[in-house]
Length: 575
Figure (tube, rainbow, N blue to C red):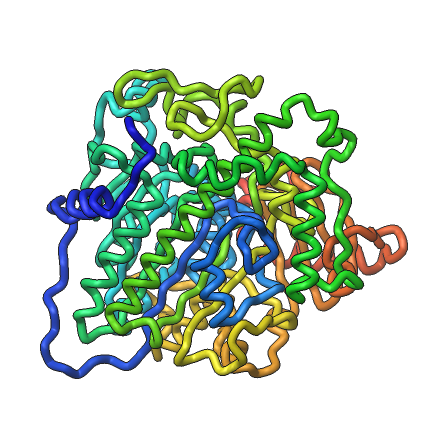
């Protein structure tokens, strides 16, 4: 497969092939001339993007289109996700803590209220609420909030992943996006993808069994989103568009022309890149060195000079940068579609990441579950634990690893899956020319926000109503707070208290205190988070009563939000 060229003609082929599928149904253009004046809403969610990867948050990666949104909008510096893909998506889509929405872990059903692996019937999605309020709704990209349907044997599963056989459903059909409020959907139902030939790709509910030559998934996601905009702009109704990028989630797969831009960038090594990012964060005003010193580098016992794999590691990070860069190019085409259809001024665009950069070693996992063993034409896919195969092409499944993830999450500690700031702290850009009244390019450093705030924000802007019941089911009360006051420059501290749990990693953030533990060690650590944003000065031994107080608050939250498994009758009481 020639992957070096993805031009306009090829993108058109991709879009045409998507539209040609019968499951993609358009809406008839309205002709009344009574255009609804409420804003369009576009959410762009990056996958495994580090806090400082993009240019406007201190990164060296070229992201001019995302930077344009920041320069003409508002950046938040204290915004939170839930540390992992599925939980963050569940919280973002429902306005609830993720356990309340049914996804405490991943997509497996544990038959417990907080661990059902899909968005439950006691939660409503943004699309369902906005559709009922008169919006057209569409989604392009990664769903990953429904139960995964695997084949009965490992070999049959690999045959499916390798495109050697096909099956009609990737999850229960009632859990598909088009059955959770989205009029239109193109993307993947599962999470991990081969960027050149993705598994679980559907249009509506119809599987896409083959893709055109020179397919690249980031292009397909962003070009489909742009096509949606050009069609939906013809309607009298406003629209809600959810663009769920896969990039830059592993496997590290990018176009050679994009990789070439960064071929020498990361040869400087972990420390040099991390320190340069920190300086830019300070100069941009995003970080105050008095309250957020650069935390110690992860696994600093190995220097870049002594790193035997420095050539491979520098190339790996170059591919990561190329994936972010190419995603930004696609976002530029989304902005262009909004501008050319006259929608840009009256559209709220929110850009963020689902968690911190990933420290995972993708090669270690090997093929199976959602990872193929060969391409469609039978070429073996390498999982080079020994770093013997360079990242980039379709035939290699690799990731940047924990040290580069630490760099991507500068200045914070830890990474994806953890409740330390490196796992849960996301950039958030809000762009809305007609609705943001603060100075263009401003920073909001005072408001503590969370992905569950999108529901309350969109309800306020759309003049919608959050239901107490939906389709015969009682709906859990909304937990988020509207961001509209922040968009209008009003002083607002946001959440006084926030909590999290994922595979044992957890935190309680209350006022100026944050209590946090890691996945591997349940020991609580205590920080005065406003004065120690990079969590370097543990005060747990100094303030044991505060640890006890916040632990009690976390446990109370956990009980109320289905974090603990439902008690089994006659089971021994947990201590």
